[in-house]
Image 1 (cartoon, rainbow, N blue to C red):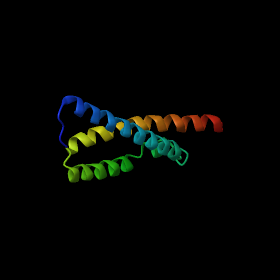
Image 2 (image 1 turned 90 degrees about the horizontal axis):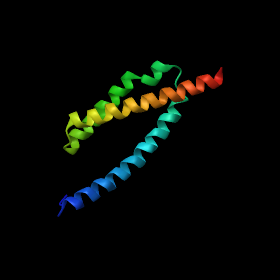
Image 3 (image 1 turned 120 degrees about the vertical axis):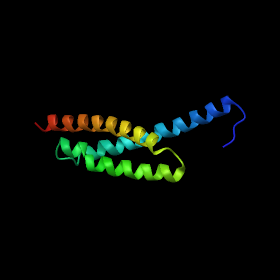
Image 4 (image 1 turned 135 degrees about the horizontal axis):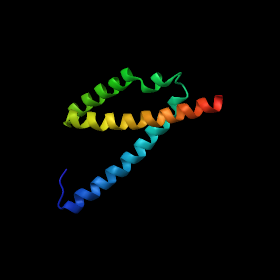
Length: 98
């Protein structure tokens, strides 16, 4: 990518951020749906699945020339936030079932 000014760079970042928010919202909908299939909180936390996702995105980052450390930090943070969200969904579902 070639930019002629900082404004061009910032505009492109804003466009990318808009796309990322839409994709993260879609991921959130999937997480919410997944919570309905979880039997308990350890299934929500699913450390083996978390590691599978981290391994996969680190491989993709490597192939794209992106630092694996950066993508791992981003994904661990995002996954942590979604685990918290999914735990809320799980507990709400449990409270309704009582």
